[in-house]
Image (cartoon, rainbow, N blue to C red; front, side, top):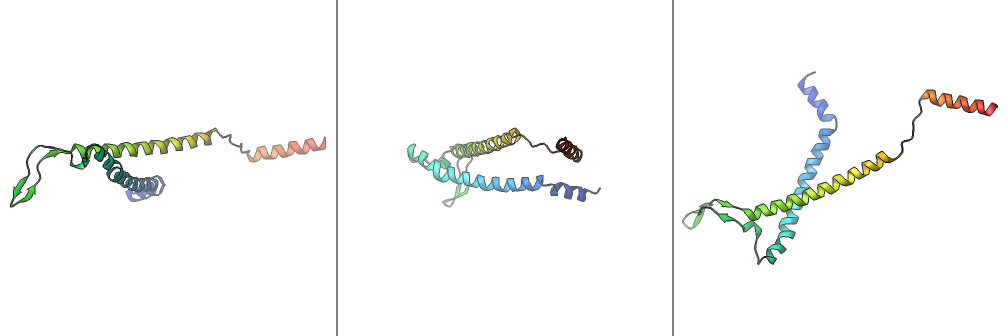
Length: 138
């Protein structure tokens, strides 16, 4: 079996396609959460803390290089405000994924708990019919 045909078989199985769809939806969901945190959650916190924009919170390690009144190279800095926003993004996404997985697992447990209707083989069906016919004759 060639590598190309193995890859084709692997890709068509369905798991890869499901994974690709999940990644696309995850990226879109990440963008929504980022906007939620950056545009809706953090501005009120910044206002409460005295009009602070969290993306501007940083510890400046070195001065920027300035020539002719223009910044040519930014100075090195530790951007802890941006890091705080990324942590909040992560926590919201993690909570949403946890809730989704928990609900899916709950549905699976309900499915597994439901009694399965036994399927009879052809022989069992035939024997049941014979039994019923013999009961009817007696």
